[in-house]
Length: 336
Image (cartoon, rainbow, N blue to C red; front, top):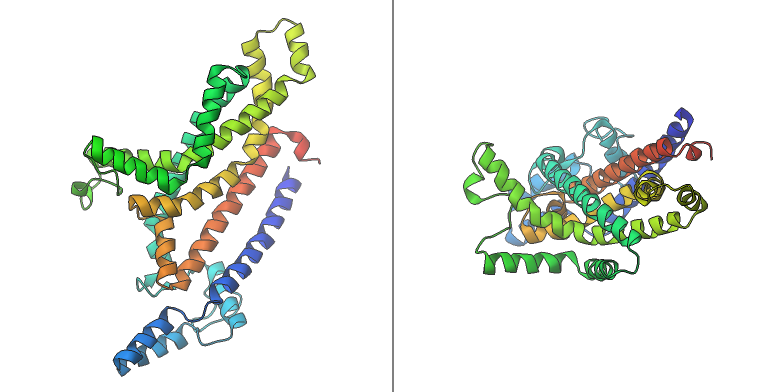
């Protein structure tokens, strides 16, 4: 098991390194950056003092150096003006838009996005598992066809469209606004039970919006896996021995059908993280998705690079955790 774990970690490190190279190159390809744009505006307005300050900041943060040296300093393998101070040392960079370290800006937003994402994951599995089992056991029944039809609608409906429809229905028929993280009266208030309930109420619809397509896809995968298991010889043998159908499904077939589903948790997690970009914009949630869009619009490249690497790190660690859990569930994986 330790050998398998060490191998997976050794694969994870070069993966993150390649992602960092691609991220840095792609973000640096467009001409200009936040300070360059500000300098152009100051030049047009004739503000010489501000231009000198911006030129000093470009030199201070090494934006006037070659791209290779900028990457090495950003990664933390080459000394900059402040020595070795890059991602490897825990320094995510400086946000020129917020005039704060990136880590301070990301902190609360990261927590919100992770809570929203993990809640959505729980929603996806809690809804998809019973429906997937039902549609497999009751194959070609009315319920199977109905759930299949609803599932295709869920897969085909874009997140932003579903979000806009729910916002409209909530406002028109219930007279409530489901945007934002909480009701306005709790924004500056201390945490209380009423504020916690308000946050939970405002998270219900975003969770449904983000998790709809994932739930539909998971239902189809679990149904297909369980149908495949029910056709195998060990199920036929169990039926021949007189075991109850409920015991065969719950104790034998379902466990084996769940193994392939476990492996796609990391992929599903990354897919849900991508859904946050649209959903947080529509529902006005101050999470990583909204922050990423703002950083791209404002050419705050330090923030954009840090967010991409942060999401990549979360995805890779999640994938590593899933691989280890899968190897624990199925010992054949460790020795393959």
